[in-house]
Length: 320
Image 1 (cartoon, helix red, strand yellow):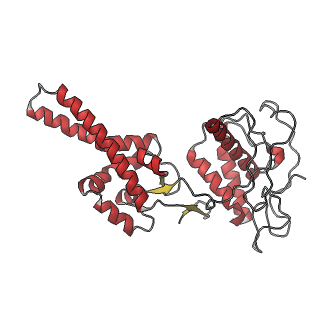
Image 2 (tube, rainbow, N blue to C red):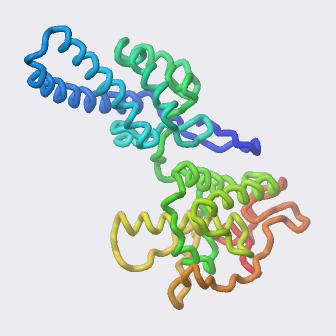
Image 3 (tube, rainbow, N blue to C red):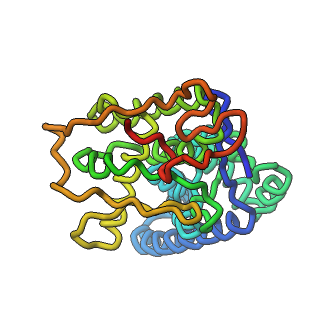
């Protein structure tokens, strides 16, 4: 297990990929790249039959560089760290701070990968990954990246508390297409760890994340809705849309069940459909997440211990 330290000095968990899964992903990527290289080479041999030996050699070198070196760099840049092999193995390349990689990160990884993987048959990359505490090869070290696992086995991931029932369907009209995957990852990590954070630090992180999400969606956070509840409701809306796209069905998706033992299932309240963003419904007053005097915020246990027995299944303080 690795830790990502945010600007508020809060450690969030990352799960670095192990050497076997990374090796399998590299083999799949190499198989795909070599297949493309052979097909392109066969086509170029027929197209350059009339050229002299020097010209054919130059074309062969250019094809090798473009396909076996430039191809992986382009794929990782366009997919933000998910090549074909990594997609099959459930891996992704991210920055050291957990954000998505850019062209410069993929370029450094690709250039050093020629030495680590192609020229030394992966020996240097394997040795570097075994020596590194987070399983990073030299390309990751110089690029400032890390290969992490995206698929977490059931029961190992943190519990994401569902939003209160009165927020169900409130954000059905938001455009979530502009919110990047890295921001969704940060929101999910915060919601799974917010009970372990200091109340003031957790509140400031929720405000910052809510501001980022609101800026991407183009709609401000509704007044009276605490930032943690807003993040939980927006994340639930995204998960509902992904489930509807994946499994189909025209009915409104139900809210996710509580992961705790015996936790109730919070379904959207009965009544009319969600109101359009042009005429938002009246939001009932919400109790603040800052603890009154006892030292425990909503969803954030105080220094004294774990969650209270009176805490609702959503993990938030219900509206007054």
